[in-house]
Length: 383
Ligand SMILES: [Fe+2]
Image: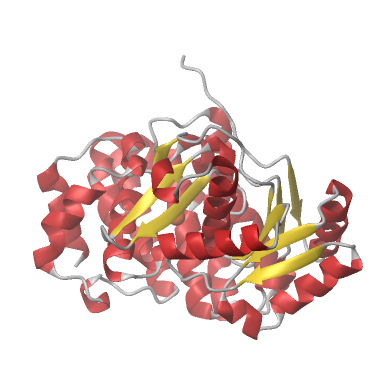
């Protein structure tokens, strides 16, 4: 059997009210000045002020960079880095969902390694650990608060760069579901379907291990049980809490087993048309898993069971079909659009999208390697 590594932040705070403990932890690390990387909606919601005031009570000064776009780009990284250098920050705190976390990782990585973020595209291209990063999560989720994955859009090439680097792992992740109560329904649905995609892609990945399998299956169970309630009633504390755990476990799975062609293709849609990551994944997920079923049917049958389907008397192929039907049902129940055409994708762009998807590092662990024509076909089905 091959060797496997398991990456995860050293400390991970979970549960209602854990933000308070996070502030004590940041103080005890001895940091003096933090760069807070976040986005404008969280400033408007008052969450940034809440965090800066809490830090001040713990003798940690902070300066805010709040211009992170939903698909963070190279300019965001450079502007945030300039603020960090100007104020001589000794740590970075990301506050938000995947976008601020990814942008913060890129800033912290370039802060210690030099050069430009484009130098670090690919796997483990950096020489040194990043500046210490604490990630406070407000969505459930990309799991970026606890992974070594960092996705930055290169606007000049219209691609999302996948930076997979052990040095981008935060030192502390914070999942306080109280910070997730205000998340709008559409964002809850998109980020929840992203987490489901992480778990399923990790479970059928060629790099899956018994550890990642356990995390993936439990994440799938919780998402199947709680995502609908989190979407229909955002103030449901139990659903928010369970979804925070679910997305974290899905992160544990894919941070170590990696992903597959859903993400490889979704990154291209997101980069090309500036679309929400979770929605792209949710639309592509059933199509790519139908394709994967030619080799991964036994595993997809297990996913169906975790989603609550009765697979007892079913063959692997029948189980895989139940799995795909259950994914479609969940996506429809949380109001995910049926295809990407209504989001602006055009058939003429498919060859470019497919070519870039085949270069994305996430596709390497898909259970079967598709041809260029296969990828074009999958994009066409998702229209
Ligand atoms: Fe994702």
